[in-house]
Structure formats: structure tokens, C-alpha cells
Length: 84
Image (cartoon, rainbow, N blue to C red; front, side, top):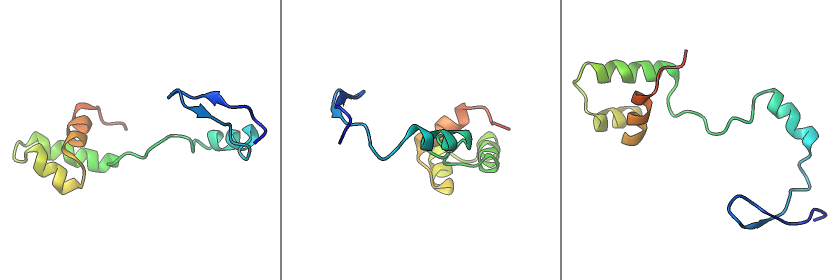
């Protein structure tokens, strides 16, 4: 490794990767590929989750089971506005 070590965010000694260059990162950023984790629910699923929640027939635990997500994820999604 040619790069000197540095302290990362966690305070652990890290090395810069030699095999990833800035020229390789820029096209990925331009294509918007560096976004992190994908959402657990699509917008249509979020709409359906909201509709089912609003009719007051299903508790959050049942909604979580139906959509194969955790109960805290149901609560987080219900607290957010739907992105168009």
C-alpha cells in the first residue's frame, strides 16, 4: 500500500484503497449510483401501507408482517411524507 494510514471516523487506523481512483468515482456519482441503501418499500407500497393504516383495521405489527418489514420501519414510513 502506497498511501499513508489515517484515522477514520471511528478512530480506527485506515488505509486509502489503492484500486479506487477519483476518476472511477465521478462517473458513478454522475449516474447517481452512490445513494446508499435502497428503500424497503416502493412508492406504490407506501401508498397502500398508508391507506391500510388510515382505515384503522390493521395494527402496525400486522402491517409489518404483510409487507415483510419491521414494525419500526412501518412507524418510520408512516411518519414520512410520500415522495412523488
